[in-house]
Each structure stands twice: as C-alpha cells, then as structure tokens.
Length: 500
Image (cartoon, rainbow, N blue to C red; front, side, top):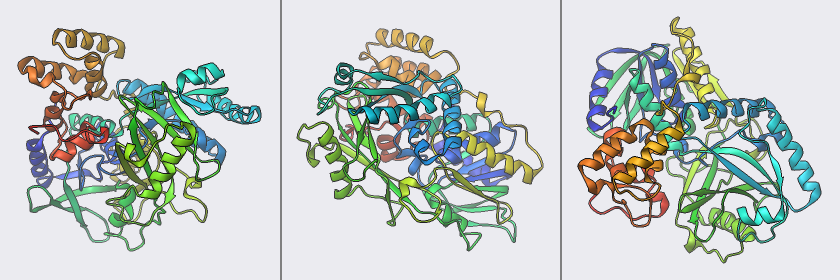
C-alpha cells in the first residue's frame, strides 16, 4: 500500500524545497488533483500544495454525482452535456468502485410534462453515442410508489440513469495515483506569494502544521483553487478573473423516514423550474443543491435558516411526513466558482471552465464540473507542456484509479474475506468501494487487530480500520479530516468516535 501520512507530507515538503519542479499546482481539489495526475503521467515533475485539506473546498461539498448534466440541455449546452457524458463513461471504466450507476426517478403526473421531459431525455440518451448505462423509460404509478414510498401524489414518471460518487474520496484516489507516478503533495501548505519578475517562477509556501515556510521553484505554476482563484491570481496580476460565486447546500435526513430506492428529483418550492435531488446514501438521504448568489466569506459558507426552509419545505411537499429543522442530521454548503458572464440567475450561468494564461508562467483555471475534471486537466496540462516545450501525450483516459481488476471479482473476494473475519454484512463490498485494491491491506490490519473490524460509531457502516487508513493512507492530519472528508462520519450525524 502506498503510504500517505503526516511523515510523507513532511518528506514531500522538504523535497519540494530542494529542487526545481516542472509544474507547481496550487489547490488540492478535483481540478488540482487532475492536473497533478495528468502532468505526472506525462513525465513532468510535479508539486501540489493545498492550503487546507484535500477536497476541503467545493470538491468535497458537491452533490456527489458524476452526471451528464441533463438539466443543461435546457440552456442549450449540448457540447457540455456531450463532454460530461463522455467523461462519465471514462470514469466508470477507470474507477468503477468509486463511480456507481444510480437510477433517477422523475415523477411527472401530467402527460404534457412527460412529453417535454421525455424529449430532453431522448436527446440525453442520443448524446451517449449508444453507450449509455441504460436508456430512459417510462414508469407506472405502481413502480413510482415502489421506488419512492411515501410520495404525496404518486403517478406515472420517467426513469433515467446517472452516477453517484464520494467526491472527496475521488480526489484522494486521483492524488494517490499522481504520487505513485512521482508527484509531491502536501496539505495544510498555503501559497502566500508568487515569485518571479515578469514571469511567475513558483511560490512561497507557509507550512500551516509545522510552522515556517519554504520556496518552491517551478517552471510553470497552475492556479487551480476554484472559488479562491481570483485571490491567488491577484498575487501576480491586479486584474483577476471576475467570478460570481453561487452557494449550494445539502441537508442530510434519516433514510428510515425516506426509504427511497432510487434518486428522486423533486421541484423546489422557491423557484419555478428549479429542482432538488434526493439521493440515497447508506442509512441516510441527502437533498440539494440550492443555487443562490453568494457574497459572503468563501472560506466558511454557512447553511442558514432560509436554505433549510427551502430544501426541507420542498421535501415536505413531496413527502409530507412532518419534517422539521430538528430532523436535519447534518448539512454542508459549498461555493461554485462560476465565471461572471453578465446578469441573470446563477443557476443559468455556464458550468464551463475558463483558463487564463497571463501573466507568463501562471495558468489559472476555474469553473467546470466534478464530472469533467479530467478533460479540464488535460487542457491545462497541454498549455503547460507548450510553455515547457516538453511532456508526453495525455494518457489519463486509460489510467485506473485505485482498482486494477474487475469490480465483481474484487467484491466477491472481499465479501468472502469479510465473512471469515466476522465483519458485518456488506463490509467487504464497502471496503472495495472505498479502497479498491487496498481492501486487502484493510483486511490484513483487521486480522492483526480484530477491534479494527468494529463499527466506528453505533448503527453506521464505517469501520474503525477506516480511521487508521485515513491517517496512514490518505494524509489526514486532523480529526476533521478524518470525520468530515475521509469517512463522512460527521456528515452522517455521528458523534466523535471514542478513543479517536
């Protein structure tokens, strides 16, 4: 198993200070991770630094969907949908344990509404070039009631397919693959200045864990900091890109009260035509996202009472079970780094990314979607290679991310091993879905210490071995890193595990 621990981090910081790297990546979200992997896979030397924790920004606070963006067809963004569907297909091949197909139910009682939605979903299917997970289809009132028990007014509907993931875990696996190819990475390492006269030649980095600072010399610097891109760009250029941040929040509810068997799309009570998605997530259901203009502090976007009222009110109208704010078990908020393209609602702004190539030596990328991170990273790295006049062709479309064999075989083997270890039902499948090939290391740790096979919190599927792996395998440095991003225990509404 590839070690990524606090000790690894210290070694990597020392190595960053001792050499000139081809590419310095600022930002450890999905885009920065993708650029680091792409550059490392082309034979370039890479250093990646993240001010907080990997995926602590928008990349760990998304709807956790790898999707084609069916709703973008309403905006006429056919090219973006085609690109998203292509990238979704690649991710299903490269990380089948992390990216899992999920049916999406769209209850539509009115016949005219079904005709309109069906036309859009037919185009959606067509854009997959015949390689969709499954074509959309109509579903009867009886099947709607089975998939969404408790729906207020079950009627006919439509069913289509997209994918679900854990965004933070996807970021971690991409970073691990980059490290395996030679990249140096460090979280809690903040760029406090960009160096160079006229041309950016790297940056000054403050160690937010150990103290002190280092200078990283780089031939090209990539600013992949998402909603913070303007702030970092301003370190070298007083004319940063104009962003219109949008806040998206999600609420977590108990699945015992919402025993849905698929994702369910419901209308928002706040805006005509706006939708929320209810997604099953183990013993929980999470609902969102909102899409509202945001001008508050991007470091700590809050879930306020108005947000809760809109999302919970929409759930209550669709599933009238008497939901109150006290029923919200957890929540999260993220800020989308949307490019300011003029007036209008943020939900209508393009989800396409933008790349700036000035000043020389600095490449700034912002915007985009979780699903299309790989193609964004390829475009950025192509630009870096032009500047460096070197580097191989992009090959990330073929690189596996954590699992090298067939998923069914890995799952069957893991379930058999889990049975021998006396683990709870489904534990083997869970270990595969979270660790891929490293499930074997998890099983070996449990064989040595049976207590690691016990639940980390009562009634939840997280095992204590996952707390250990977060620190030794995934560079988790704090309890928050472990509980919020590596295991999601905090977002399942669990108290802090005893002894951690």
